[in-house]
Amino acid sequence: MKKIIAATLLIASTSFALADGYTGPANQATTGYTGPTNSAAQLTTVKQAKTMRDDSYVTLRGKIVNHIKKDRFTFQDSTDSIVVEIDDDLWYGTTIGPNDTVEIIGEVDKDSPWGKVEIEVKNMKKI
Image (tube, rainbow, N blue to C red; front, top):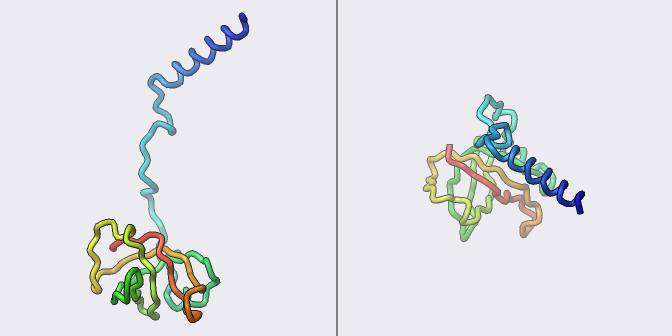
């Protein structure tokens, strides 16, 4: 019984000591990396994306130039154009027109009908 009481007191005193006033890394609010990046090295062109394996992740920068139907759009960069699938929840209330530059992170989809390559968009932002 003495061991249980001692263990309980040890746990309780340790938790109070750790919770009170700790300001280390785990308690700091972080919103993401803010340092420099070489985003140009991470970008993929549409032409390159069309030759990549199924389920490869790509980052594309260009314009959404046409709405095909439902969640399918035509995306175009300086090298080519491709169909992208953008679910409604990825717009985040943003209005994007054919003259706006966007960055798309997505997955190459070679399982689309008629063997065409498409991009399933996972995230996008207006640049």
